[in-house]
Image (cartoon, rainbow over all chains, first blue to last red; front, side, top):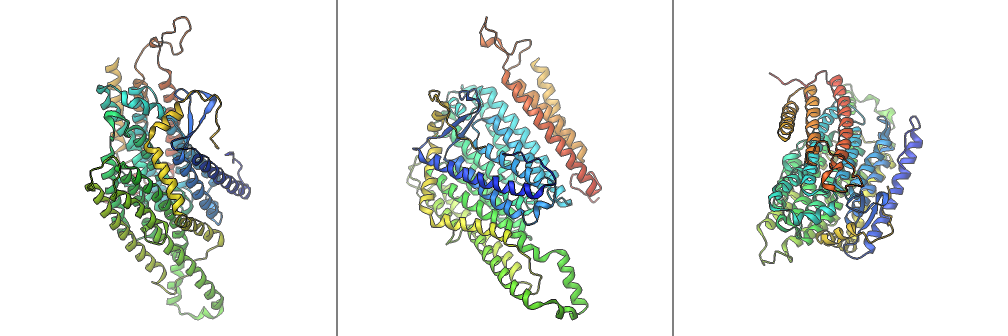
Length: 522
Length: 113
């Protein structure tokens, strides 16, 4: 499925890539249906080589991983179709690298084993290094250099954390680990928590939590648009792992370690939102604006994870899907908008102004004028759509996501049955609403600058194949709004099975299942 | 033996961190290599130190406590391969950056003095 090693056959490779990505999306939908068919907490386990769980390597499919798979393949489909217009010709090996990235992403979402997670992580990182440099240029190489160093250091931290955890517990299978955490001797608990903390640093760096996110805006702004749009899911890999591990290992059943690190997540997430919101306001350039809104998005999910309540987690998952789709569409759109103001075009405009406009007559202005209106109108509508989704305003899915999140925060119906809303809840409320406002201001400013400021700027040439993915992602956001009820039910079920980690542990470790159930599509 | 290994890991990791924080790309790549050696040793150490113990359980004794833990070695092997590959990749980017920017400073330009 991933053997795309031919050179010089770019069109064939492109066709194969699109076909494979489309097939992946179909598989992801099927897996999603499969994961939702069972009762709460049922996950499908695929044992590689048919070794029982604590010894062999397992792939685990539950609602959360199926959801992430579907999200990945959707974004990938949009990005690859977009790249067909011109970006896949900007450098060598775009299609194989793209498929390797997808393999790493899918593996990271499906794996049930910490060390395997490391392997898939490195796979997706190695592919992402290549993709980041795709198209080359000094800005990309500079950003890529920093990105690679930061990620190599993070991988080393990851290894230290993994080996500390292994040294204490003697296992790396996530479910087995979760079963052993409550019975760790008190004197080893410090080591375990140190290991988990170091491990979390590696993931939080990937997710872009506040002090660790210095590399992210530059890198994402420098990447070529289809790559940046698929990178939007890469921060979500970090978020996903944090979500899964913190709830699995340090959930309510973890004995003395229960809730370890949740306040760090909460406040780190809040700090990330604030940092991201300030960044969106400060950014002069639309690509940087998009990169900072990635930070806002992952900060929101992290903070919600830190709250540790089922309802909040459900809302956060809804938010995660909606914001990732929105930001991904925005990254693609930025390029289309910015295309009208390329440096060369500016030069031509200046020259024309200086030397008179005598060559206007033979340009055929009328036909171009007609095209301008339609293209700019379509771009404008798409831009407004992205702004609404990212800032979280009605009527699109961003609003419903934030609404669900905040409703759950304001109605703490679970373990913390104190009646009053905790201070952190108010903090989330204030920060989330004001960050939405900041994003709105920043997006409006960027929109005015792009669409109203210079009436006679050159018109971006946009091809249908480039506009279609943007529209596709936005239509998905709209569909998420229309179908908010069923989607929300799915998210709540996901959150419930995440918080009741017993089901996951039992499913993975059960040895009575004599026949291996196939669950892996990769 | 524990002391020697611990001092070794500490020295490697300390020099590695110091080198990574240096402004020249060559120093950074050497620092990364040193740090990855330190981490690999650390993984082996986390599987309990034991000299001369066989890895696989022979059927006649069957006492698992007499044997070395094979899993850390498998992990280290994977980690070595991966960190080697990524370091090589970093080297390529380093050279590209050196070629494009004309300097080996990590920011792609010399600081103004």
